[in-house]
Length: 111
Image (cartoon, rainbow, N blue to C red; front, side, top):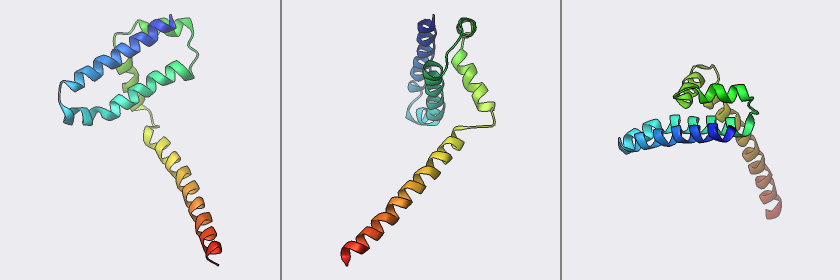
């Protein structure tokens, strides 16, 4: 049953991709955020959740469940930006620390 759900979600995503491709590159660029978020929703369901049979049946019963989940996700307080900001902050710390270490090493090597 899970396989049926994953196939349904992938078909919905493919339909969305095909639909935006028809409208040209500018439209595709405008919809890239939605495309990324929908792929993340599918990945979350596939890899991060252990769905019950009832949950799977409920998702399978919806016509456009991926659109529905995307719209629900948009209405939540948290967003992708929070996660990106956290990642950027962490990366900045690591990169800056490595830069400082390299600078000290270069100074010491020059002596």
